[in-house]
Length: 380
Image (cartoon, rainbow, N blue to C red; front, side, top):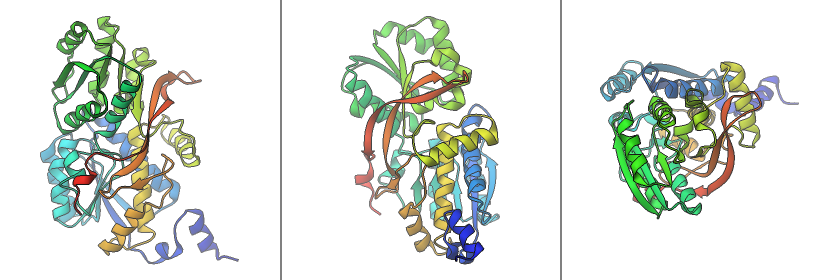
């Protein structure tokens, strides 16, 4: 008969040796908890903390601070966390411009960075690093899946739009990589923009058959409200960020029926996802978003590595991260050679569930075991 301690450890999915001997892991979470992007950072944080609570893991300490969507603040927080708080691992950043400001400095100081969201192309390719892991995606991926879907649907003319920052550039590049029809408009908006009258006028005059837009957080809410009021009837589609759970309620019925692409959906049929969605709803009284799912998986990955290796032994801890031996809410999960996921991408449709809550359901699959376009440029 196993000792009670060992039985409890196995029930949590952790190794007895990991619980007994591995050093505690100190995690610094830098994320957006104020301003128009607060919902995204809140969901990453809440998903991350829920994973630790559900696992019963008490050996991971988390320090959380708000970056206010400002790169200079994020850099200051990272330096403080490393030099004063002595964190082992950093995570949490939502925005790619903040990631590009923070991650290289973190890596230069010998720390691990695990991204629960931002996936700028340089960090997947030429600027990849052995201590950098992206647990979410590479920025192009959701948009590649949308471009692939639009191409398969035979949409002839597309108007595409995204904010003018690294993830926005990656977004439209990703869409164009797989969509081969005519682009009747390609527009980059200001990051944080809330007035889209000029862009909607361009869409109206474009002759487009469909609009693809990537506007996460409050930007997407503002656009969809104004688009619905404009009377323009050209159908819209986007990556999952444009129709994520955190914005659907504010968008209202204007979003119903919109197609969007993601690596995760609340109705994804695997045991861990069902457990996660039910637990998140019970804990926070709302449905989880993509950001919450990615935060949950990031914490689960850290916990799985900490159960196998001492974080102070960088080589062993890195190998444990690379193994990715955790139950992902996405089902199967594996890292490519550049430490970015190889994963499936789904086409989701915005619906109202049985309780009248706006959410997404899977309508089709766009990619199976999809790899990002930059792994070939990563020389680790």
